[in-house]
Length: 140
Image (cartoon, rainbow, N blue to C red; front, side):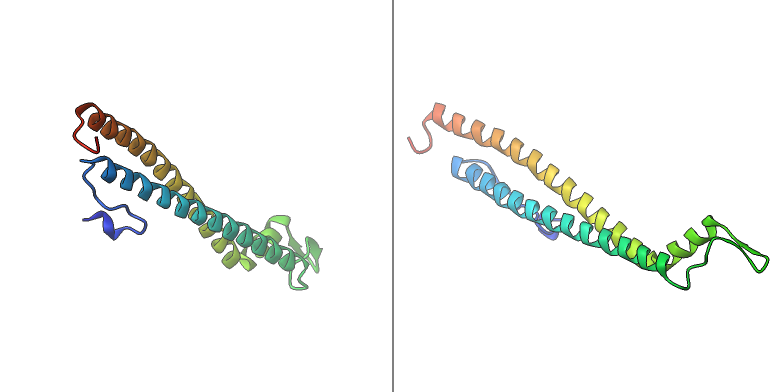
């Protein structure tokens, strides 16, 4: 499977010349910019989802349908039962929050991976440049 199947994947290259190595380094720089923006957006989405979940929890707690804690007409309602009822009311918002959190974590991991790969590419680019400088084969 080719790297082109993955969104944001970098093309294969042959670092045979300094321009090819520099082009790859530039591609990593652009990919890093995109990854930083994706992480920023994922963080915003996570915060929005968390706020929506918390607002839904407050609405459920203050709802007239929320079971009060205590003994009423011989029926005992525990705090655990009330919390379970509230959790059931906000399950969709909780799911959205968990998915947004996972998306932010994935975006963060992607950025870390690109940063490491970019560092390796800097080393390769420097080596290619030095090899051509010593041999005088390119651009001398």
